[in-house]
Image (cartoon, rainbow over all chains, first blue to last red; front, side):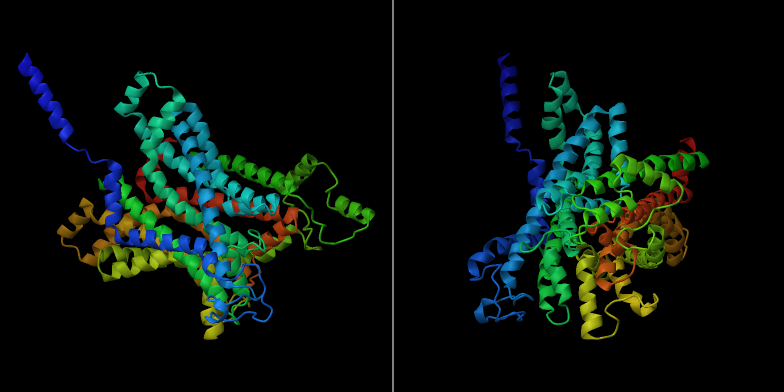
Amino acid sequence: MSGLAADRDRLVKAAQAVRGESLWRAAAARFIANRSAVAGLLLLVLIIGFSLLAPIFSPHDMEEIYWERIQIAPTLANSHWFGTDANGRDLFVRVAAGGRISLAIGLLTALTSLLIGVIYGAIAGYVGGRADEWMMRIVDVLYALPLIFFIIILVTVFGRNILLVFLAIGCIEWLTIARIVRGQTIAVKETEYIEAARSLGVPFGRMVLRHVVPNVLGPVIVFSTLLIPTVILVESFLSFLGLGVQEPSTSWGLLISQGTATLDSAPWLLLIPAGFLAATMFAFNFIGDGLRDALDPKAR
Amino acid sequence: MSRFLLRRLLVMIPTLLAIVTLSFFLMRAAPGGPFDADAQLEPEVLQNLRAAYQLDKPVPEQFRMFLSGVLRGDLGPSIGYADYSVSELIAIGLPVSLKLGLTALTLAALLGTSLGIVAALHRNRGLDYAISTLAMTGIAVPTLITAPVLTLLFGVTFKLLPVGGWGDGDFRHMALPVTALVLPQLAVIARLARGSMLEVLNQPYVRTARAAGLPEWRVILRHASPPALIPLVSYLAPAVAGVMTGSIVIEQIFGLPGVGRYFVNGALSRDYPLVMGIVMVYATAVLVMNLIADLLYGVLDPRTRRRMDEA
């Protein structure tokens, strides 16, 4: 009898000695080993750092107009490191200000659609049956809409309130996330741990939030990383058409649009903000690809 | 097959109706009206103008009139472009947008699939990396950067091509807008084709074809490529939507007289009938594209064909 107990104790000890490698830690290791993904992350940190810190280093204010220095090329003189625009405003601080707006919009909107998409998809997938069928039919119909037209109409409806506009975009962009989460949820639903939780009487809301959602997050994280640049692009696109961010506030899209107007006389006004936008797109895409490789269940 | 087609066509009607209803009421909810720009109109003049365009009626009544007009094929008069009907404006703009979009789509499909296949065949070698880098650039650098930068390079610096305008849609005027429009789609298609081709190259039937001693070009062209390219058909509809979106920016930058420009101007000036007309045209185009993609899939892949017959 005591021999059995000793055996059991030894077994328990042995089991405790085996350090399980958490899936997230394994994924993190894979991500760090991916050179282009890490480069993308560094690039993104640099861009965010620039956008936040540039006003500290530059002596200029983004709205200050220098009548005597209109549209000068990038120079060290007077600390106009990126030159000045057609109105004589310093481009260095304006690019940083545009970056803050573009990045904030991207993040906020991606979060909004993430929240809606995950909850909607998880409920549809978990409940199943007729409710699922209807919920997904709605998604199908919305999917068929030419998105950009709706965004343009929404912008005209909400007018100048940029925050509302992007919450609205978030309310549209959640469709793909909802689809992904639903598919994953249906797969997860049949697993033993969900059955165990159900037999313990875990209530519905807690079930979805604590047991289903965390286990379908991998693909969602990947998709969201790619959603942020998409949203930043939509914003640039709208600002470019004169429908997004309005003067005196600015964004990369608006700066690119203004740079396009002075293309032949002041190419730096186009090339510098365009470079920042392109670099941001590259950074997010590299990070997204790296995350996909790191979190892809097939790779395990 | 025909039952499947019929069902899909019937589903399109409520979808289109939902789109039209949503955009109609959203447009009317927007603050401001089409006559705001003409400052200081006499109240009676304004009243007469509103009555002339039926804007004095309650919105649901306007919606009913709009729908019955659409059923008769009448999209109404444009408010912003006086003397033009919406149908006339679309007839002017659509050929330009269509020529631009179809050229871009065809080029993107041809070049994208070829590049993707070539990359897959040279997996993890120089050519593959070069093509993948190109694809990443195409995905990361949006049209609103490529279009002005291309203009700067070829129009301003080297003065090889016109910086804008349509001419009569000749090659020189098309070159830059089409290039800017093609790049992102080409990139996505090349990536998809590469991945799909890599998967097919591992299939037993490809090994069998090789083992049977077929020349390599025949294995690639006859046995590996067709099944590898079938999944790409489902990218057709998103590609069309992408080209439509891109062409709005392109038409603006290059000053091309297409439908996209009318749409943006219409939305800005609250030209309700014009916006509704263009939304309908584009929504129909996307829906029809979706349908064509599904049908093509059925024709190309026998496995889905059987499922459609059962539907």
